[in-house]
Length: 387
Image (cartoon, rainbow, N blue to C red; front, top):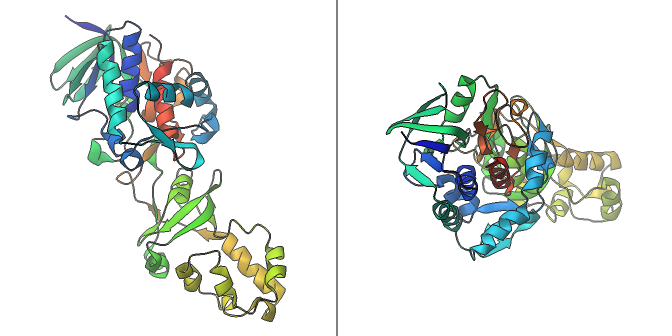
């Protein structure tokens, strides 16, 4: 009977990278993937160009019930380490805004690189094989649609619940709970926000309008673009804030982030004979400036009380909206929550309850910001698993 040194559950970013690293250290490694191709989520990432890391990565760029947990792994495998691997394969890349790195070509280059790393190290990859259960009578026994697989170690790299159309399931959480682990309730993250019918009637006509904002809810503020949709709000700023949003909470949006001093704005424009709405169109998309229903926007600054003008600016800089929900896992880029990190070693990703059981990548309660951070967590957590 064949007994593998390690069986990796999932041929996504974390799973493939972990498999190659372990095999390079001399372990006999098998990867089990229920999809018929590896790296399906990688393929669609970054608009098909794979935002494979972010040069500004620190543990502070992640949401978790235990935010310090990611510090160790991220410090030991850095963006520069992964960039070196990418460059060793001759993959050209470029930096977009805010430290985000993308392939010049396509995301398939990253998948091909990871598979090549596995194959050169002797990893066996089984595709189209569904994992049905994991048990540990002595060593680990993984029951699959193709029979039993035996191993000394099991690494769970099954991802979260986001984008079920690509095969996402709750298998990793099921395995964690089976072995006594707590699971922080998985929720959609980096996901568009939706609003009630009344809000949609008021603002849905702006669908397609994009504006630079600063948005926050119960977490840090994000200064990026926001996009109106027929159902609500999306765009990088809103996707970022969504990771920290909880049911019934509000989102604070600064529609004029480049105007920090309302008093100075008032003094500068008090002799401007244009109506306020037209002045604001210098800073806001015209459709948005025209849409805002406030009669104080329809008179020149100098014709109004100073307090009224300042109140208008304050309202625009502190626009509070209360979403009714999100677009759900179908549209979420990642999953918030996951296996509770208080029961995992931050140095090795090994369960503190079950020796030989590891959890890496998105299945863990570590959720990165938009812009390559979740890929860097995949690489770093995978690299932490010891050979």
